[in-house]
Image (tube, rainbow, N blue to C red; front, side, top):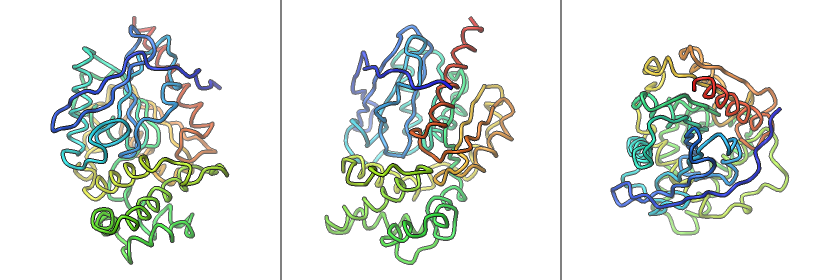
Amino acid sequence: MPNLYPPIHPYHTEMLDVGDGHHINLELSGNPKGTPALFIHGGPGAGLPGNYRRFFDPEKYLIIGFDQRGCGKSTPFAELQHNTTADLVKDIEQIRQHLGISTWLLFGGSWGSTLALVYAIQYTHTVLGLILRGTFLAREQDRDWFLCPNSGAANVFPEHYQKFAAYSGNATRADDICNQYYDVFNHADEMTQALALKAWYGWEERISRLILPQASTIEAHHFHAVKSLALLECHYLKNHCFIAENYILDNIDVIADLPGTIVHGRYDLICKSEAAFALHKKWHNSRLQIVPDAGHSTSEKGIMHALCKATDEFARFMRKRT
């Protein structure tokens, strides 16, 4: 199985003014003449991971990464104003136009898969194909799976969910849980806010992998990353991710002819496997790979290998086209 490519550094970085007072961090790596590939990170609010370039052969791809509004190196930090799915999709299109790219590959994981699909539906003519990991369709059932006490993740990790539920009162619906947390994030005293942010982040961290590394604790993560992920994730989920219920599946025929690879861990407790299967069933030009011994994270070997294999296969597909 293919391994991650060696670490490389970007050859160009800039802060792109996308309007509304937001500037997003933009990075270019790899081969300037290679197939353009846009890496769309998860969260919302996670920012670019350190190893994202390593999923691509740097000789064959122009690797494009960006921090979405309000997170990573983008400014203003943790800003919720003018921070919606429509804004992020507009930013992606602005990046494409700014770089003078006609068509590109979209590579998105978790929330990044949502953005990739929404963008592809709205700008189909610009997309060569999609590689998705940990599909999140942003339906009510997907939000429930992640957040609710009687749903998927909570039933597997009840003792960890108890810590998460400490800041959601007795709420049992995803909307109510988000509203409770949102109120704490924005109106509680500074110490309580910090503890609630860590509780939200800690819940996601615990359920993100099939086996959590022993050294992986909430203290190991910079509070900057903890705050942006927890706050922005709550903001988006509270607002149903700013897209209509079942929007992606209802519109998937728009991208029916685009090639897609869907990689999903069998034991993904953040984004349930049913979502990946439902997407695959309606998207006839897609391939679904369920990784049998993995959860949600790209750090798990099976997920990592499947994604590298997918980019290698797409590079070969592009060579045959030219």
